[in-house]
Image 1 (tube, helix red, strand yellow):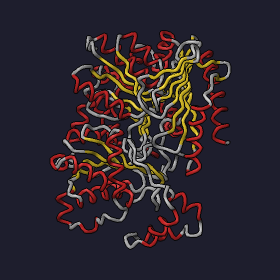
Image 2 (cartoon, rainbow, N blue to C red; image 1 turned 90 degrees about the horizontal axis):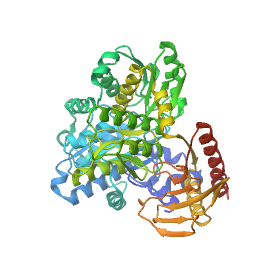
Image 3 (cartoon, one colour; image 1 turned 45 degrees about the vertical axis):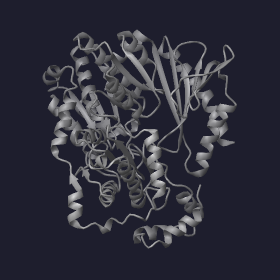
Image 4 (cartoon, rainbow, N blue to C red; image 1 turned 180 degrees about the vertical axis):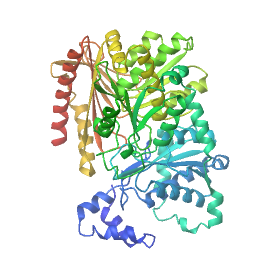
Length: 582
C-alpha cells in the first residue's frame, strides 16, 4: 500500500503530466474515495502482465504506466544479454480504447532504451503475436489488450522468446525492474523522426502468411472441408476485435463458401456498443449472431473476443435447436475428434499428450485414457500449457496434441504458445462438417461422448470485488476456507482437501495430512467421498478483481449430475457469501 494522497499530489504537480491527464486528476480533487482507488496501489505485474481500468493514476492503465512497464521490461532484457536485446521485441494491439496509442508508446520507450521493436500496423490477435515472436526470433513480445473485459479496461501482456507468456520468476524480475523506474522518467518525445523510423519496424505481411500456412496444416480432413464446406453455413462474430481478418481468411481458404459475418460487430470498436462485454463465454454475446443464424438457417455459430484468443461456439442439435457449448464441452469435443481422426489414420504418436488446466473437466481425462493418451494437468493460466510444449521439446519426449482451459481457451499444434481462437475455429468447423457427413451434429457427438464416458456437469460463479476492500474480502474468503475448512458441502462429504499454495493435502476419510507434489498456485480443491470426478475449486482471478468458484459433478445420467452440481454450488456459495460479507 502506498500513501495515495501524496502520490496523487505528486502526479498532479508533475511537469511531465500532459494537460488531459492533469484535467482528469483535477476532476477528482474533491473526491477522496476516487483518489484512493486510483493511487492506493499500483497495477501488479504478474504472469498475465498488467490489466486495469483506463484512466489517470498508478492503479489505472495509461501511457505513464505503459512507459514504466516497458522500461522495466527493457532493463531486464538488456541485463540478460546485449545479444538478446539485439533481437528486438514484437508488439501487437487489439481494438480496445487506447490500444494503438499504448502499443506505439511501448515501441518508443523501447527505442529510447536502445531496443528495436516490430509493430503490427493493424490490429492483430494474441496467437499471431505469439507466432511472430518465434517467427521473427524476437527476445520478447507485447500485446496491448484486456481480452474479454468490459470496454473501460485495457492491459499489457508480455511474452518471452519461446512465444509464451512470461513465467512467475521472470515476471517477478520484470516487476522488480518496473518498481525501480519512475512513471515520469521516460521522455519519448526526445526521439527524432530518423531514430524512430530506424528503431520501430513494421511487421511484414509474410508473417501472417506463415501463420496461415501453419494453421491450415492442422486440418485432419482437408478434402472433406473442400467438398462439403461449400454448402455448410457458418455465422461468425469477431465482437469488434482482431479476429475478423484472420478467422475469415483461414475459413475461406479451408473451403467454407457460406461464411456470414455479423456486420454490426465486424469493424473494430473499443466501445463494444451492442454487448455488455465482448466475451464469447457469455451466450448474450451471441444475440445478433443468433438473429442472423436463424435468418440464414446457419448450422454453426462462432465468436472470438477482441484479442482472439478465446472462442465461443453454438451448434445445432438434430432437431434444429441452437445449443451453446461450454469451454469444457468444446475442449472435449475437439480432443475426441482429433484423437479419433489421428487414431483411425495411424497418425497418433505413442507418446502423445494432452494438457488441461486444473479447473477443467475430468471428462477430458476419461477420453484421453480411452485412447491411451497421457493427460497432463497444470495450474490455471495458459502459459503452463505452453510450458509443457517447451518441456517436451527440450526433453525430446512427448508429442503435444492439444491443450485447453475451461475458460474457452484452446490450442492445437506447437507453432503458437498461447490460446488460439483462430486455428481452433478451423478445427471446430472441420469437426462439425465431419459430423454432418455422418448424419450427425457436434451436439449429438457430445451426447455420444456422455453415453460412453458418463455425464459431466460443470458450473462456475464469479464474485466481483473491486477496489481495496474487495481485495481484502477475497483474501479473507481464501483464509477462511483454509482455517475453517468445510468437511461437507450439503449432503456431500469431503474426502480430500488440497491447498495448492503450500502443497498440503488433508484426507478426511482416513484423518491424514501429508505433503503432496502439487503445482504451486493460490487454489483450493475439495473432492468428495462418493467417487466419480466431483469437485469444488476456489481461486482468486489472476487478471480481474474476482474470486472464482468452479463446480464439477459426474454421474450416470445428466439429471443426476445436474442435481449434484446444483447442490455443491449452493453449499459452496453459502460459505463464500458468508465469508466475504463478514
